[in-house]
Length: 73
Image (cartoon, rainbow, N blue to C red; front, side, top):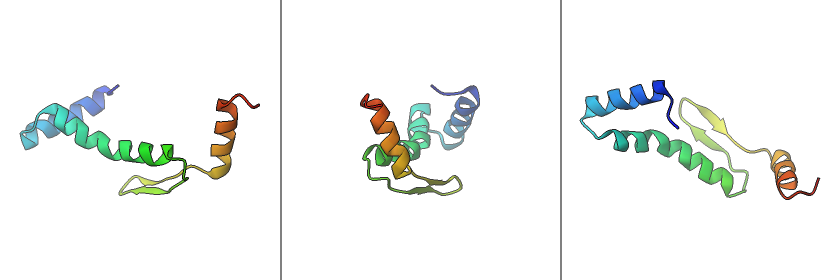
């Protein structure tokens, strides 16, 4: 779901670059989809997004999440 602020930014960029809004939305979301995909691979890879920082999953936290998800409390 897109927040109102995010929708406004996408609309502004679409007008500025004369692109359809769905294309701009896809571009904006692609970097976060990349981070999600890397984290779902389960390799605990670090992913750096310029101006946002480094995103990573700590191995111990991943172990805890997997343990709780599999019902092995």
